[in-house]
Amino acid sequence: MKTTSLRHIALLAVVLCSGSLTTAFAQATTPITPPPSTGGTAAANAKALTPAEQAQLKAARDKVFATNPELKTQGEALRAAHKAAKKNGTPMSADSVAQAKAFKDQLRAAMLKVDPTLGPIFAKQDAARAAHWGAVGANQ
Image (cartoon, rainbow, N blue to C red):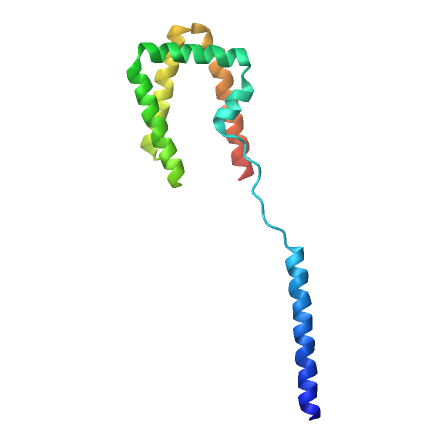
């Protein structure tokens, strides 16, 4: 009888201790939260430019797209492909990246023909993009 009661007491002690340990552990852990979003390249570009510079870019882009609807269609198709890849969680292929860069270069060249004063604004965008991606790379 004494052996049985000692076993019961030992078992009761283990159960009581493990319950309080589990509670203490559960209270000590905190959920891991991801770092705040950097807002992406577009947000970095927007922060780097004044509202007047943004309006100047938009006016030139609108003028280019009005005179060259094929370029607008090409940009919309690239944007839709990028959005679909992002939604599916798949990275852009090297070919898609090359197409996007070629489109950007073509669009910028057309915008410079419309407004030759955009060069410094493009340089500000490029610097903001480089700073953004350098910061993102450093956080990973």
